[in-house]
Amino acid sequence: MKLSAKKYLLGAAFVLLMQACAIKKPTEIHQKVNVDLAAIKIKPQERKVFAFKGEGVFFSNDFQSARVNQLQKLNDSTFNITIEAENKPINPSAWFAFKVWGKPQKNVYINLLYPDDKHRYHPKTTIDGQQWQTINDVKVNKEKTEASFKLQLTKDTLTVAAQEIISSNQSYRWMDELTKQRGLVKTVIGHSIGGKPIVALNSTKSDGKKIVVVLSRQHPPEISGYMAMVQFVETLLGSSELAENFVNNYELVIIPMINPDGVDEGNWRHSFAGVDLNRDWIDFKQPETRAIRDYLLAKVKQQNAKVYFALDFHSTFNDVLYTNDDRPDTNKPGLTNAWIKGLHDFEGARQTPVKPSGNGGNVSKAWLGKVLNAEALTYEVGDNTPRSYIKEKATKVAEVLMEELQKN
Image (cartoon, rainbow, N blue to C red):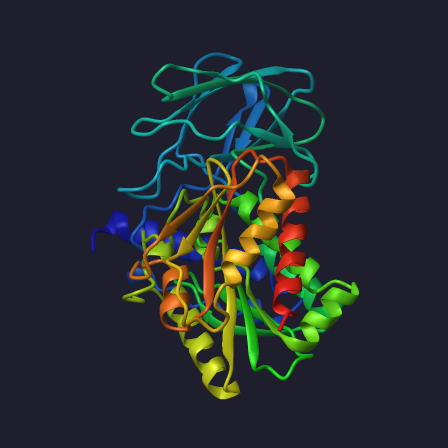
């Protein structure tokens, strides 16, 4: 291995170690870091603060989910930020995220440059990490290789990102809170290449013979899908009579953060191995997907259980549902069709498109259907679907699922 490559990999290991130390609390599961340097096939970013003291402007990509590949000053207020994918080939999910601060009231002009790809996400900004505002005045060139916008600095640090940031730390904290509030069991079922825990949560009030599986965050930038997953899960575990009946009869298994390395590196699509994890559900070459496969197979065997329904949350340009071919021999035949009908009845004229695909594919829904005989599908949420509607829709489909599962 060349010395420069070793430096990159050792640098990545150090970053991962520092991140893991930062998330030791509130549980002990985040302490283990066993970075598989040989498996890292992407070029990590150089994490740093870009200081322009004379201009009174500072940038940083030294935080989870950041992505800045290069940053250059054009003049005292204009800066070029180059955004490149972790490796190639890759789909057009050109993620970016950085922090900027400096002289209050100073106008800063940003040019996002994509040497080999195209601009996709309208930038969003936040001060507190909770309330995000979309920058609507963005000029994009004809080829979509450059996007330009203005920022006005304040006394606070401004975070700018392609979508709202939900890092692995934030997701682990949500898991801890949900476990405590809803009486779940939390299990570390494996670790990513970067040594981060792959966590499964499960409810415990049923006899464990009938299971519903929820997956999320195979692809790092897919924030709107993660938001829908959170609302969907919290509805299933809610305090309504419908939810109480559901958890008394079905075990809910949730694996919310499948690709923590990619999420925290600010990757567009892939894991540290430079692999699309949702194309690894036949060969299972990656530790993240193997962990899920082994955990679910063992659970089904040990509990003599059946998986009735499985939903994998993703994001794309617009809302869409990807289904398996309809089969009469699943553990709950017709459930997907009934669930989609309930969704469409709720949506009225603005119905989410449904796109069936064969069961022989290498994605999660295909494996869940083919191997576990589950009614399984991929729930894709649009990049720009209004966040309030994401919650409203996710609540409804959770209610529809519970109603359908409780029918004879």
